[in-house]
Length: 428
Ligand code: ACO
Image 1: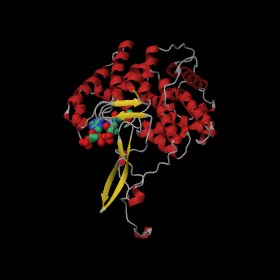
Image 2: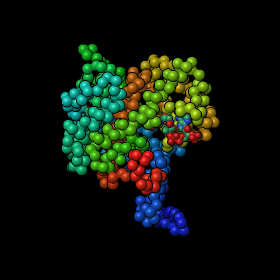
Image 3: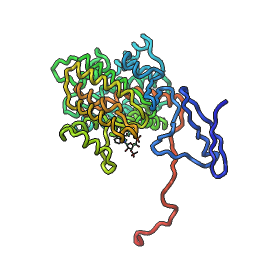
Image 4: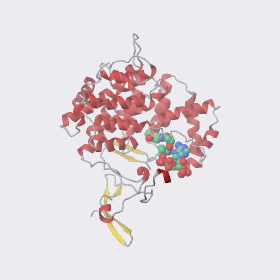
């Protein structure tokens, strides 16, 4: 028998259906509550609101579990590749050999971007943050592929938008970086795989040979897997919200890139390095910075700490911490920032302020350190996150369209002035 919940207000009782997910998560379905009672629910920041049902990612924040389509993040990070994981997220199953080959080849065929994109890029000053450039270049694809403006067209058209998004993302990302340093852009080398192709576009200099370091390319591949999806977070909810108005996939994802940019979301990985460098410059006095983070009169927060959903540990942070040790060891990089990060983590995890609030290192705490060791400049950290998150955004957009979800339109409780008379300016 299906479960129900009862809500009593002003002497009236309403019976509400309860929805149970695959992992026995329960939600009270309040979809019809307003029609029955005129009452809405209030939940700023959607802290306890399920905005959708989804079959893509399972996350249990209390137990530190993250699974894509049922597969644990630990297993995928160890055994899979980013392109395989992208296929899994977008199409629901791990690809067979032929499916993977086709997906990979289709992506390779579309890595070039229209030459006019360079004119758009040229319009940006080199002071432009690469995330802003990336979001703009991504959205500009609506102009080059106007058929994408109709997201309801046949599935082959949607498939092409997915392929183009995956294929062009590394090109846009590397070009945004080249613009920031005032260098000419590199074109994609399709003899290389996804991450190596991106690295060559990022780092190759004119007339100089560039050889991809396999340690770096496989570390990037792993980082992208860890970032590939994270259910209904700020940027993903943005993609679904924008897409719910039947905007194109390119504009929906461009909106997601902008949402990811903020320092409380994907922008935190850049902020972590800024913070660790500031602590180092300040003489490495970690206790002083912990005290600042605890001081309610000081806006400073320990960047890379805390998470809306994980209240035990972030499984991605565990994998990244180990990967940081491996990669720095293999590359022979000694980074004093890493020691500060380890000490900071040690002290914070023993401090009652962080223990009581269940604040643990999140994915961004160590990812910035690896990116730094791999030679990725700090202003590109959030762009790296966006490259990783792209298949998740695509999968969530596709699911939302296939489920024919209605346009997203929350309610509010008005707290402003009651109706009043207009006062002419001479009498104010
Ligand atoms: N440093 C110090 N105190 C913190 C931190 C932090 N990093 N994070 C949360 N707190 C405190 C808050 O001040 C609050 O304390 P109070 O109860 O005494 O008022 C309590 O912990 C709860 O914090 P909220 O802000 O209510 O938690 P919320 O779930 O809204 O925020 C967030 C989560 C935004 C991630 C927050 O922990 C934060 O700002 N962290 C730093 C930024 C960061 O690392 N973001 C990346 C998140 S991962 C990602 O998006 C990929």
